[in-house]
Length: 316
Ligand code: UDP
Ligand code: MG
Image 1 (spheres, protein in one colour):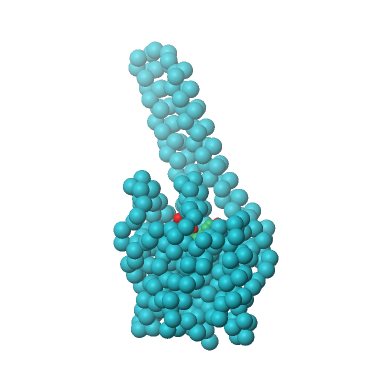
Image 2 (cartoon, rainbow, N blue to C red):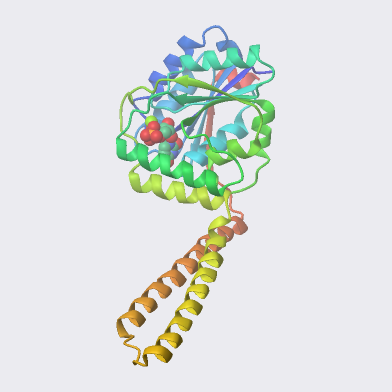
């Protein structure tokens, strides 16, 4: 049985895939014969597929390159990689060299020596990003840990090594909205958290804009918590209470002071506030309905156009 499968999602990484391949071969030379590298080309618009195809055709080691019919997102690429992986251990690593493959060797060692752990997750000791982004990420983890039933670890990345049981557990989850941080947390198992240092991207630029990260965060909350739905009931209840208090206050005021109610500004702001709350609640409902709709259509998470394998991988 293969010892190690390495899953690499690639989206416009033509300058990096070769570097990553070389680095993997160099840092895992002791088990390279027992290792397969699975590249997923997630609908790149540059020369990534050409580079991957060439790599897989020429490599003396076990290399598989999967080509998607378009860009389906990193989560879809990870799922495809897990489905293709055959190893006793499966590693997930970015294609951009921010995560040095030398750490995979350390992760393998940890799982070899500690049967009590089922997964190793690398986390950044020092985040190399702007203060504002860090603050937003901190707020997101506070919020999602408050709302979801499973625990999300804030500094942990997708850079991981998983035992076969964990990969099988992840593959048993049929959902289409795949938020991997939540999925890793949801399946459970004992995870060893290993510190690592993030490096600079070798070439190209990050695909995660602030807007993309924000909608990814919303997706994560929707996929792993239904508490936002409770929010509307709570708000509704609070506003009912407030309305009763206000009505009493108006009656008492009129009885005691006898002056007519000068209510126009109050009314206008109340109407605005309450219609805002109502629309917000309907919005939350809509988000869950939309997710339900996507899940119910049960479309495949991705479409594979072509798979290219090295000779060695073919033989197994
Ligand atoms: N990626 C992908 N599909 C996408 C976006 C990104 O497969 O739609 C891959 C990308 O090629 C890289 C990894 O996911 O290997 C992480 O992406 P990126 O480096 O842009 O994210 P960052 O490191 O900035 O969080
Ligand atoms: Mg990156």
